Length: 221
Length: 221
Image (cartoon, rainbow over all chains, first blue to last red; front, side):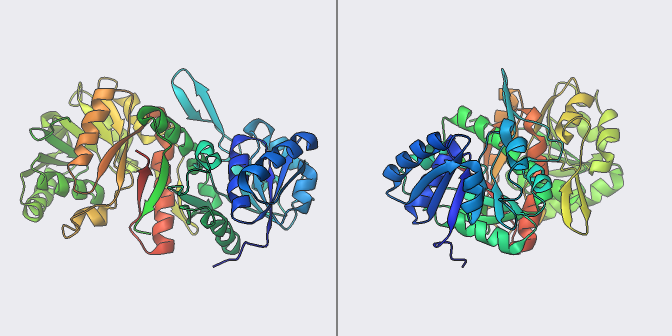
């Protein structure tokens, strides 16, 4: 088992629902969490809120400082800001493990659908823009609502962790394992990230049909 | 619940591993199964084998007759033969529910990966070639090995069923439910089939890493 207890996890785009939800759970587990946002002021506000909900150690700052001070960084940016923001953080994220959880999705009258991404996936775009980082992809299907609801003491799903660097995917799996109920499962190489991101459209369709907060479990593992 | 007990299920490409595995389970459940293949002779051989293993009603014939006599048809063709074979079966499959389970995958030194499909997915290619049929997509992640092993009395996975026609997806879900342990879950519209097909690359990567026959379950549903 990888020990992640001493890590500072940076959450880029940490004021969004997904980043905030994961920040709450990591802070609850005793990790130091650094919330990044375009606006340091907004990040500090949300960090205070997350600290109160989680009872943990949470600070807020701008994305550059977040990337610079973090040991490992979660990319939870809106897809629209993904490329531009990461392009500016190459130096700050150099040598670090980066976790991309972004789902490039569109919505129309027929519901959600996967957007085409030139690089293949959000994770591969991150890899192209951060050639000095160790890019992984994970935490795509976790319901932000469930994460933020601290009365849910067992989050019933597996997190698929993708990447080409075994040490990196093992560490990210351990970051999934600290959330009660959650299990990190290796899910393939980064070139197979698109379908995991895109599957979020199906998860949303399932949620609508069944009025659920669906998750994915892997059987026989 | 939809009653599928009186249906004749045709399996196009029924001599391949996936088609044969599902044929065994459906025949065990008491459905009439018709195995189709390019070669009627080969189909008859495999049908006899499936009948013996399952103790059920199984016949073999060429793909055209299979499509013509079936009430509902599973497309379990090799991806290489998918477009050409379906193009020739438009009339035979007219008005029928068609289930596409084909995963367009490539393999290289780094393992499995998803192929690009001009129409978006195998299922959408089927929809384009069979405009008079009710095309759904399902049964992508079921291990052929597990299906064929009749000592496995509980197949531990959910089958995601995709399609735009509620009556059709409900019937296909019922065809999943007849396999012990399996549950059919609505998984979104047909335009979101690509990622479900492509996810089979991840399932194979998981199988290799964990030496498993992995399946997918949907939680909170």
